[in-house]
Image (cartoon, one colour):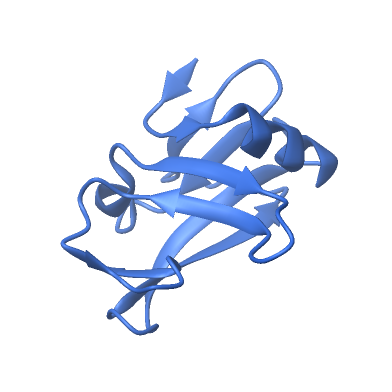
Length: 108
């Protein structure tokens, strides 16, 4: 089991609903953009690469990233909210120097 990041129970439930598994991993990466300079991106990816960094893995789920993005995810906490105003995944990054109001972009 690997836990480079933390997933809340609600995030884990939602990822299972989205059919994220050991075989269909959630791939996270960081790209330039957003209000604060960098933003998170994600996709379900059935192909693992030898250079992938495993951010989270347990008996059911796997979350991976590329080696260049990995440093941006150290200690990241992912939550999921289904509230009416702003439903979706929330990223809480302790390494972010600044985050935008929507929480989808950051500066490190």
